[in-house]
Image 1: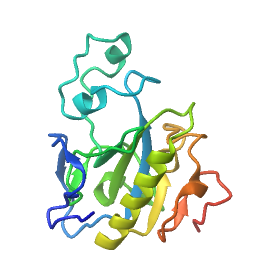
Image 2 (image 1 turned 90 degrees about the horizontal axis):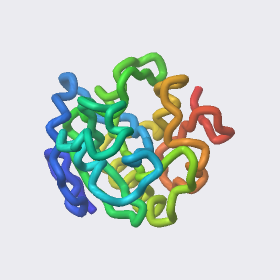
Image 3 (image 1 turned 135 degrees about the vertical axis):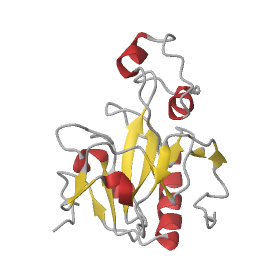
Image 4 (image 1 turned 90 degrees about the vertical axis):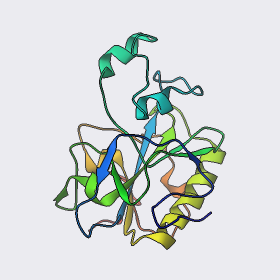
Length: 190
């Protein structure tokens, strides 16, 4: 696994999203944000996440989609239940994954973070394959960028977001990057 100069991982499936823009000048990724997503909620497989992140989701195929109609979001990476890794946005660019957010006094976390979506929900455990792939990816990111922390979406948008959720096992992360899950005994933030 290797990330090229533009921020594309060679072993990931590349499905480019139009939902990105430039990071601020001289900004490099220093934070990794873990999310969960499934579309429709609680249903795994299919291509709805890819369709959402590429603005191709048919809003009329499921009632839930009406509540997110017109949403333009993305993430850098998506890890399916079987461990398949998809990349939508190069790490050198700003994906639209965090929304209104702040980390240690800095707002707009999209400016300085990499977003990783795990196929899942707050209500179910993640798979062994997902933890294996996530650990591989975190270690590649640590080698490529000055990443200083890994946290959840709930930590950067408390009260607004709950993912990766209570079933995400932070103790299964095996990386030299400091882990900062919101509300966990493993939170090493100061």
